[in-house]
Length: 203
Image (cartoon, rainbow, N blue to C red; front, side, top):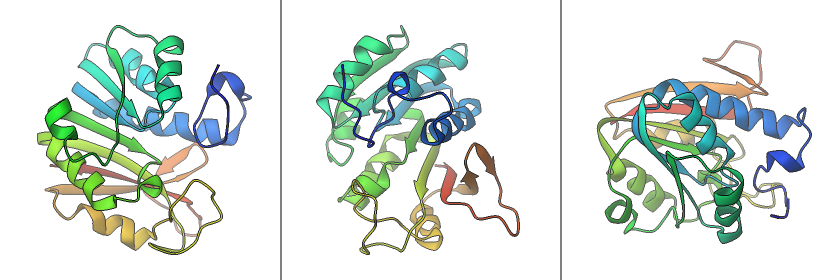
């Protein structure tokens, strides 16, 4: 059994009404319409999201590969979330050899990952280099005080501002930005505070 530390979502150890769990489920639900061909789930954690997408888009996808740095999470995912279209691997998101190891994808999902990664540019380069031409990236992060500034989240290196987050994707041919508040994901409404940003980018 994997230990719940608060860093990764483990649905069977959380109440169905847990806000953090519901937020994560909403992000994967948001990504499902983009799923086709080969799909990569960066920082898949316990594996529930990779399997959720595989089940929902089984007619559109060829495979889902979920990767995570944590060996215990990958071991847990292999046991708890088996699906014939899903493979879980222990990998470092900032490993420069990752594109060579894993190949090209039609969709890359990366939810609540970048704020954990010290080698931010290498991580972003890996994503771009692993996308096929026309491939989609769906990525999210919590907003905060900005790059290099302290955060009260113990597992986060920093939390980008909205402007810093949106500036990361200038290499893409198309980019759209959405916002999340609880289970609500939309394009942003005046007067509402959104703690999380989501980008949908086309290579």
